[in-house]
Image 1 (tube, rainbow over the protein chains, first blue to last red):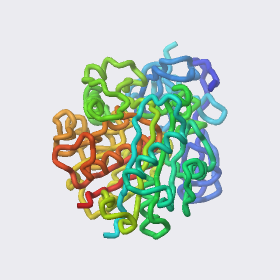
Image 2: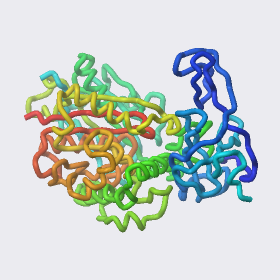
Image 3: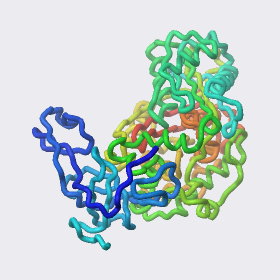
Image 4: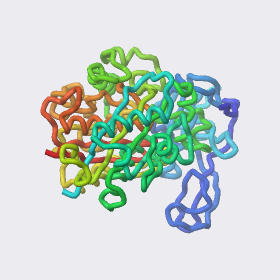
Amino acid sequence: MTLPGLDPASEGVPPRLERCSRCGRAWLIQRGFCPHCGARETRSESVSGQGRVEAVTVVHRSVQESAIGPAPYGIALVALEAVPGVRLMALTPEPVAIGDPVTVSRHGERGAPYLARPGGAAGEGRKR
Amino acid sequence: MNAPCIAGVGLTPFGRQEGSDTLSLMSRAAELALDDAGLTRADVDGLLTGYSTTHPHLMLATVFAEFFGLQPAYAHGVQVGGATGLAMVDLARRLVQAGAAERILVVAGENRLTGQTRDQTIQTLAQVGEPDHEVPNGASVLAYYALLASRYLAATGCGERDLAELSVLMRRNASRYPGAHLTKPIGVDDVMASKPIATPLKQLDCCPISDGAAAVIVARRGSVPAAQRGAVITGGGQAHTHQHLSAAPEPVAVGATQAVGRALGEAERRIGDMELLGVYDSFTVTLAELLEASGVSGPGQAPADARHGRFDLDGELPLNPHGGLLSYGHAGVAGGMSHLVEAVRQLNGTSPLPAGKGPGLALVHADGGVMSSHVSLILEGSS
């Protein structure tokens, strides 16, 4: 499988979620209806990528290159601050640890690849 | 007693089986189970099969029925990842209880090791991930479980050497069990020195990829000769909490708590009554999460319980005497059935590696996906 490459320095765009217009809850996977209350009135919205690292790994053995290059590469699971209960899986170009504040950006048309960079506010922690 | 029994079991050796394929392996396990039950093909009136990654097919049950020589009144496939084997047995007992069939053959197998490349297997397994939000990151099933392991270690204060204890125990069992894939004894240092896969998991935290097959016959007790009425299934429970890790509940293995609770409830037993465990162990962290979520071990205590001998063959609560997925091996759906086969052998007193105290009550549990689908069964000796 070939995955789209990306420039690790690129800014990307904020993560996009789907939100129910009736009950107000939000989720990651686009489906055109609310999985909680069943409403068909939903909207797509961009949210802040600020969050905290819940889990982290460095992949050493992989059958494919990641969007930021061949193994080893880091992947984190990030809990979004703005939307409790929503997690994003993201590549980590710089090392991060569980509990670290990070900001997630979206680099794929539909979603992944995502990048999680150190720092709780956009721009913060980007040492280049 | 209305509880269906397991009239026969079959388990092929796991590992490299050159020249084998899905149907030949399934046939071998089915023959073994029929022989064990003292039954013939004509006695089988129901058939449940899993899936095979080396033989994907819309109608695997029917393909197998024709190949093996069965014309069952009831047949189809089932798919819930690693939980498929136990889900099939759970379904079979419900079908028997409902009167839909009397003697149901449950069979699975595949040449996962020799029938495809290791990369193909890993790529197939990666598809349990979310195609838009997880897989394009370069994530695989190894990464999902590695993420789980990092959280487990952070939450419990355990270290990598603690998780390694579970791998060491499985290898110790497998080293004495006929047909196991990996038999060379290992210690914690060997696990720590094995090559990194996805931190904190190393190669010896991960199960191997094996060829192999397993089969069981679930029957109405009155439909088989008295001598063939083996262990009975007195309870079953399931829980399906999510598919993808990014949508997992908190705590992540709560499905195991729910499924085990439902199975114990039906069997009118408590977790403390169990005398033998067969618990799914695709990775060391899988086993730790499931032992703790099921209430067998306290939070973060599964590795210490293993280290202190609680799960040894002659310990208080023997665990996976055949060596589990981590060392007997993992051949897809058949891997998830191997724990059940071994539990039945232990309860019937026919295991090649009998547990010290002659257990009479067993819990078997498996998960599919990433702690996504859970199935638990309670088995009791028939004597």
